[in-house]
Amino acid sequence: ILNVEQSPQSLHVQEGDSTNFTCSFPSSNFYALHWYRWETAKSPEALFVMTLNGDEKKKGRISATLNTKEGYSYLYIKGSQPEDSATYLCAPRGTGRRALTFGSGTRLQVQP
Amino acid sequence: DAMVIQNPRYQVTQFGKPVTLSCSQTLNHNVMYWYQQKSSQAPKLLFHYYDKDFNNEADTPDNFQSRRPNTSFCFLDIRSPGLGDAAMYLCATSRTGLSVNEQFFGPGTRLTVL
Image (spheres, each protein chain N blue to C red):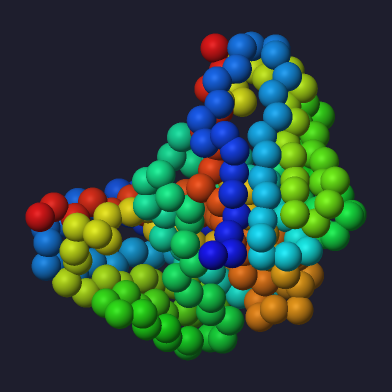
């Protein structure tokens, strides 16, 4: 899978705001989509792995949806907190391929 | 805690001087990956080891080599670093047979080339 696009590139919100990001990818040969959160000076941390069209995953205030037919995934953060400040990376994986192809990420900054 | 460790966290080298970055893991995963991330760009896969089998990406420059002496350790060697090789280098691991090949990452080594 090539040409993974994430938007916006960066986002500044106030504490308490809800926000969402988009990950777009080619829909052919889709196998799975991974979302990672990467805080400065830490390891990228897995948030979700999604495989089925229509999948919805939730972890606390963060949720994600997947549309494999049109090739996109949304990540939502409800009531953003300063500790949500990080870069959010999506990485689809194609069938027959072991490795992930990453987007360039959305950098979120939450102001107290 | 089981984890992926990268040393050093910051590495400074001179133009043309060979440098080695190291990665170790306590997860006992059979696959290890090296990614390169340049400023604000997507992490790009350089190569990976599936057990002892080395898998190079087609567009990885020959300047980049890797060694995996055992399951736990993997090294990235840059034979003659250029200014364009300054980047964050991420190591990751996964285990085949686990659901959808989730990858676990180290914190990265930031390489500066003077």
